[in-house]
Image (cartoon, rainbow, N blue to C red):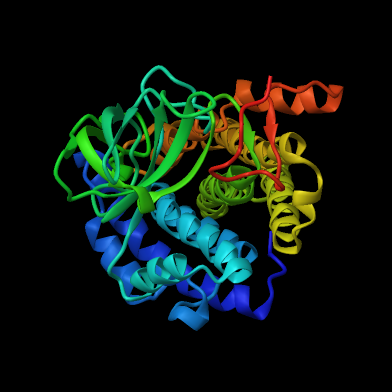
Amino acid sequence: MNRLLTPRQQELVDIAGKLADTFAERATEHDRENTFPVENYDDLRAAGFLKLTVPSELGGQGATLAELIPVLERLAMGDGSTALAVAMHISPIGQWASVWRRTQHPRLADLLRMAAQDKLIWASVTSEPGMRNDMTDAKTVAVKVDGGFRLTGRKSYATNTVVATHCSTTARYEDAEGGPRLLLCRIALDQPGVTRHQTWDTMGMRGTQSNDIVYEDVFVPEQDVVHSLPVGHLDARVFETVWSWAMGAFAAVYTGIAAGAVEWTATQLAARGKGADPLVQDTIGECEILVESARALTYRHADEVGSRRLFDLGVQEGIARCALVKYVASNNASQVMRRLVDVLGGASYSRKLPYERMWRDAQAGIFMPMGNQAARKIIGASALGVEIAPVIGFDETGPESRAKS
């Protein structure tokens, strides 16, 4: 269905559409060869999209979450892997931009200017084998040394690290005063002790090249520990930045994959003269409803983040609301892909056609953070008034926060 976008959103979506059409032409080869679409990043850079969410005062385009979401969706209609990879850069930049607008913190300004000058590409490297990625703990070990910490550990699903210059990462500092803390750190990916291991060989999202990253005694200066919280706690700063932006960005990507599949299917069926078939109309109608339902929830979320009404809910309920957005979008996308098979038939199974790649890419959304089971748990617990973990509120978040029983 046609979207009702603002003039600014439409301008950005038009640019994204031209990029997405080009990316779609390259997607099959990168999917088949299991390679990262570096040339797509060259195009994104030339279009100014790598600095899309950098504040205009610092040299960027100043896009809000509400303006980012339809861009990611349109990119994903052409190539889900590229959309997901670049979301790992544009979304964190947007998170910091929103904090900088409130705090005017000079170190944040420096970071954002680097992004505006194409000197910085970001990745979020927090997932670990065998541990749920909920930003409350880590297996990576942080040891205190003079001037900072030494990190040792292995991270998985490190999307965007083929081209990223820096990343945010997590580590557990066991000997912190008051009990173990989760450290959120900034790391340059070319510094000593950081290695990328080619482990990515998956069913879908192959072009993201989300390989493993290993830290071997990597030094992190004190000033590059950007945040910390007691292990096992839900934290207001993490809610405000990571959860509120990442869940909207992920939702946009998977909604875009589904929307691209619906558009491609409708075009194919219309060309076969099947537009008047009641089964085809019923199927396409149902899929449009699923896509529009996800869009409505995601756009509502962007409005609540932009107005900051979301942060009045409390930390756990707010995170649950973020999880809801991504849950609905990823599961609706998967349902769309299953439903379209009924009218596509064998065309849905051909490696020569883009649908089967879209189908495979869409499956990743179900287990990406926040995964289905974790999302249902926090949504259900919040509705029942049950605290799933102690909360560090907005009035206490930061390095001085202390563990609660």
